Every structure is written in C-alpha cells, then in structure tokens.
Length: 262
Image 1 (tube, one colour):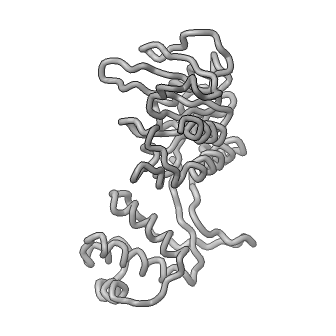
Image 2: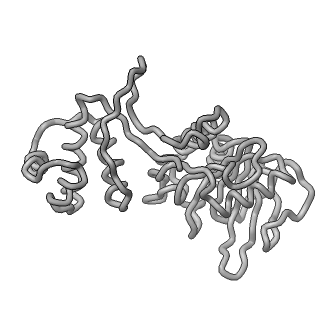
Image 3: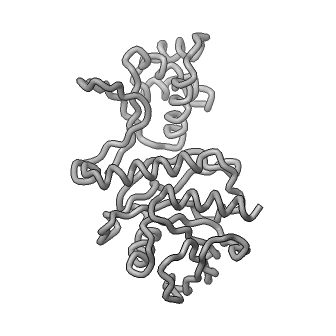
C-alpha cells in the first residue's frame, strides 16, 4: 500500500509541529489530544499554541495539509528520517512496498497522476461535479487486473466547487474505474480515465464521444473516443468518462471541455 510522507529539514521540525498544534487547536482539538498526536508534553503544546513566532509560509501550508488529514481521521505517525542523499527531500512524497512502486512504469504513473492533480487544483469545475466522488485512474501499458491501475484514494477532495486536495494514490483501489478501464483498453485507445457529471452539450465541443450501455458496455466500434456518456439507470446517476493516453492528457481535455462549454 502506498503511504504519504512529508519531509522537512531538521531545523524546521519544531516549527512544523508548532504550526500543526496551532492549526489543530483552532480546529477545536483539546491540548491533551494534540500532545498525544504530536508526541509532545501538554505544557509544550500550550506553549506552542500561545506562541506568536512567525512561521514561514511553506511550513504553514504543509501544516494545513497535515492538520486537514488529522482532522479527517487519518492515522498519524511522526518519525525522523535520516538521508545520506546529496539532494534535499522537502515536501510530499509517496512511500510504497518494493513490488508496488519500485518500477519505472509505476513511478511514472504516480508522477503523472500528481501532475494531473496540480493541473486541476484550484480550478472551478462546478459543472462537472457528480454526486459520487470524482477520481482519475491510470493503467500500466499491459494492465491485467486492478492491481495494475492507480487512482486517488477515496477520490479527489472538492471544496467550494474546486479540487483542493487528495488522500494519496493507490494501486488497485478504485474498483469501478479500474474495471471499466480494463474493459475499455480492449476496445479503445485509452490508458487513463476520469469520471465527471453528465455533459449535456458535448456535441458543441470538438471532442469525439460515444455512449455506454446500461451495463457499461460500448455501443459502437469507435477506436478513438475522448468522452463516453452513460445515461444512468435506477440508482445510477448519468455521468461522463473522459479518456486519454495518461492522466495529464485526461485533465487537459476536461479543462478544454469546460472552456468550450462556457
């Protein structure tokens, strides 16, 4: 399982814990609970929460991301990482078992999904938000099962009609998108997929489109399709699936569709 880790310089660890403590306290966490989460004494937490020390913006941003995850119930472990690399590891990274991400192909998929997320982050996608969570899945070139397909764990996080965050990337976790993508790869030139709300006026764009049957099967023999539409069924809302060669390609299509339909 791929896990998310945050790296900071040793000199910034105290500032990071201080910023997290203040953030959690502002979210109505009791100081006793904060002390257990951050492995600090309660007097130290009290000292941190009342501090007026100026904290760099990059540390504040990192603390906000971590605090959000803690607030949403994600388990938290604090470790010190020692590295002998010449490069400085700062920011967000994903750690996985050897057989999950060590290959160049897996690593490229993870990086592509991260790039796709940042392309979409902060953009107004209100017209594309379905009732179910939005997600993006990307497959290995010779994917055989869901373990060969990566997606965002629990979908993308949306607030105020904008993509704001994610809970990391996992292989084999998005069952619906994975099974659909595996099926589509046998019939259509597509290696990535994103689910969005049904697009009523797709014909007004320059993108090719087709329809899926009620049981999510292809209705024609088109090999090059940008968007597949599903009209919905009992208990299933109408939706659209944007396809592409990779996650970045898919997100760029979504952004262009949004612009063309304005």
